[in-house]
Image 1: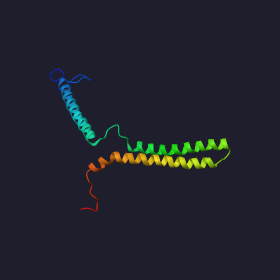
Image 2 (image 1 turned 135 degrees about the vertical axis):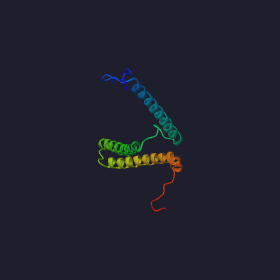
Image 3 (image 1 turned 180 degrees about the vertical axis):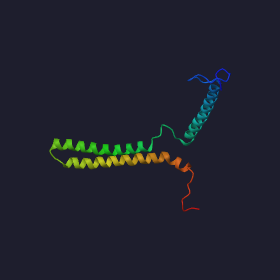
Image 4 (image 1 turned 30 degrees about the vertical axis):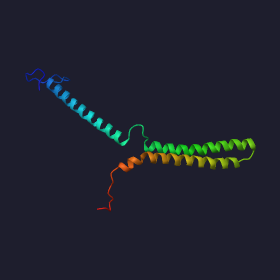
Length: 135
């Protein structure tokens, strides 16, 4: 491919018009393929209910851990402050840590039930997977 059609190679760093046209055609084809894949992915996410609004599994796990931890910390801190105020150390702190743990655990159970209820239609719509023992 020549720069001027006379059989001479193009100068260093220059692209011949034929190569430039070939690159342009390939980039258009790639752009069309990418657009088609993006539209298929968006359509699949809409039909399944996925998307950026859904939490990832790691996000949900950190949320559960944080709820449990906050319940224990708030209960312990409140118990410690009341023990200092009333001079009943460590009894109020022990009681309120236990209550904080129970409250945090209750929040985790509620959040897990909500997540399960939200994902139940997806689980029912998923295709069945054969077991290794099934033939």
